[in-house]
Image 1: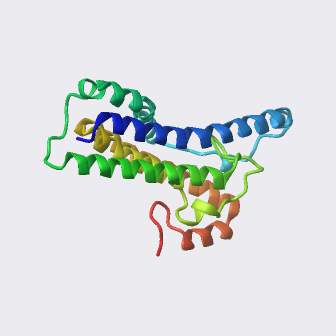
Image 2: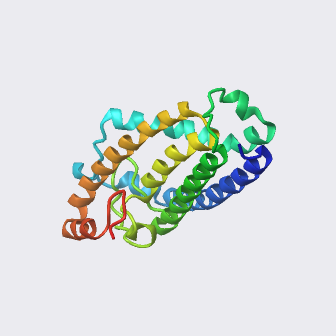
Length: 214
């Protein structure tokens, strides 16, 4: 098992890398949305084709593992530094290569953070939530040239990496979030295809959904 103090330091760096980028862009997005709030309230309702019809099971299977991940990820520096993670997660993977397993988990988390940060910077402050905003522009640059859904791919990496970092097989249950996000991505693509037509169809041919095309 990698020394707890070293793990705490590495995970602190990971948390800072993620939070610093997303917090900055979240503040910018909040300000942009605040300025457009009045005009949005006065505007006519958008067409139903702009609304995401996401199944309830997909919302639940994506949301619950995400909450588990964020609680443990944000608390991980403290959990490892104090050694509480051993008591907090009593079910540990016992294998002769525990360092390698944790190292692989850290690598997956780092890949997810880099992809999430890159995707967020590429996308900017405009993002769909329950429906596709009229001012939404198709993003095909940066991380979106690698995969069509970098944020959801990053969550997939998080869900696989987390149980390896904590050496806890129970956390592997977070993997059920992957099909949830995949279904959400499929629904987003339906709306994007309706919105952008041939432009998005060509983008689908060139860039993979969750896996890069080579």
